[in-house]
Every structure is written in C-alpha cells, then in structure tokens.
Length: 358
Image 1 (cartoon, one colour):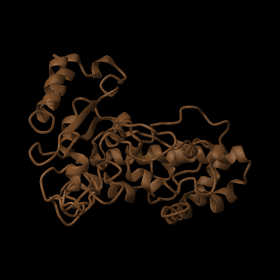
Image 2 (cartoon, one colour):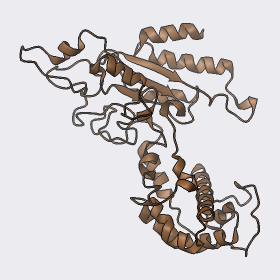
Image 3 (tube, rainbow, N blue to C red):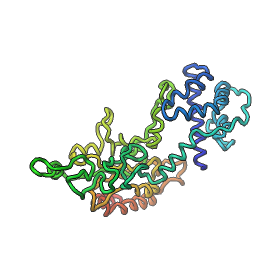
C-alpha cells in the first residue's frame, strides 16, 4: 500500500494545484467554485465520488485556496499525504493564512479506484474481461480490443484473431471473412490465399502504447464542464491510446493515417483485426520479460506474427549512471526475450535480430 499512498498524495497535490490555477485564471469565488462548479468537470460516473469528496474536504480546500496555503500541506491535513516531511511543491506560497491543523479524516476518492484497478489487472497485462480465456476480449478497455484484436466469440476459446486452423465456414480468426461464394469457393481462399498473412505485435514501453494525457486536464484555459468525464475510460487504458499507436493504431482519425497494422491490413484485408499491443508504461529491457508473457501466439495453430521490440528510454533515463542498465545487462535481457520468441512466433525474424545484436 506504500506506493498507493504515494500515488494518492501526488494526485491530491496535482488536483489542488489545478484548482488553484483555475480559480485564479477565471477569477472565481473560491467557495462557489468548490461547492458548485468543480464536480461539474467530472460529469459522468466520477461525479458522485467527487461530490462525496467535496462534502468531506470542501471546507478545508476552500480555506486553503482562500489563504494560499501550499497544496501538499492541505493534502497532509486531509490524510492523503502520510509523510509530513515530504514536500512535492517546493516553492512557498505568497503568504500563509491561519494554521489549518490536522483537518478532518477524509476518505480517499481514489483508493477504491486504485484497488479496483489492481484487482482487475494485476501485473499480467491481459484482458480483464475474457470469458473463454483465449486472451482476447470484446470489451474495449482494460487491455481489451483497444490493445489487441476483438474477440468475435467470447464463448469459444478456439476462435480468436490470427487463428489459422479451423473451419473456413466459420469466422475462426475474427477477421470477418468466412463462408462460401456461389461457386462453392471459400472466401478465405478467394481473397486471402494469394497473399501472406501476418499479425502485428509490439512489446515495449509508453511510446509503443502511445501514452497520452489530454492537455485540457491541466490547461486552465481549456477547462470547463465535463473536462474529466472521460477520466475513467482513460485510466482503464492506463492513460495510453494503443488504438493510435504507430504499431497497432487502428482508429480512423485525421491525425493517424498510417500504422504498421494499417499497412498490413491494406496490403491484405484478411489481416484485419490481428494485432497485439503488449507495451507497458515504464517498461525496460529487464522487466519486459514479465510483460512478454502476455503475448498470445501459437506457431502451429496461428498465422505468423510480425514482432516489434521497442525500448526507447527507461533503461537510461535515470537520475544516476549507477541506476542505468549496462550494455551487458541490456544485451542479456534482449537476447532472453528473443530466445523466448524464437520457435514460437517469428523464427526467421528473431534469428536475424539476434545476429544483428551480436
């Protein structure tokens, strides 16, 4: 729970700083904003939680904003920051009002979400809702079809994107192409046989997952009613947008005209719906060994898979050289990942990559 409390503390400080900036920018009455306007930004499922939080913490928040108390001080008073010696906001407030003391014991508005999130996900990075346990889901978030192809039959574990074996009369690979034409020819053979079939998968970090936080969440000039209405679904996708990733992007948007998946699908429409995004925020060469276990592919039962291993900065973006991944450690960890893949999903590609690394 230590990390949970730290996350709650940081989130509390950020929320209060945003509130302070919003009030100052729009020149609002503090009490009116906290009691009447703030929770309108959470229009949707989170609004009742926000209202309950304001009910308990509103008086302290109003006093804090009015007296320009530092936000981490009030989060300590609310019991959301446990370490009284820690200060996230280093700069001092312009002036201090009366001491707010210990304050009320406020139930965390995020703790239920934190527990729910951990209980559903764990560290497996697999769909939270998967009735037939084939690692695919017909739910979009929680590592569902935003992250990997949609399951077209949640009651049959042998039907999933990328499956090669099975009856061609049925949509066993969930690409939407199945059955016979009027001459008795399978549509899969008619449209897919002349071209090679490939799925696409990426294992990596936040760049591969397309980590993205909406600017409107922190830019007071863009805030208003409903600003945070999509907070829950965004959290359910770990603040990532894999549907817009350069590897597995599959949405039709004006700013995402190309992705590896879109290219493969355009080359052969039978590759439709065959993608997996196993990228995880904060992934490095070392901890990707746990992440790669979420990859779902059978070299015998499924079509070949085009793999991308994308690790951009978490091995070297550290506060000291001693904490960085060494060249030897990186080579060892990457070779371990390639050995896991070799003979399972991409024999030729993995051998080529291994030779390049050596």
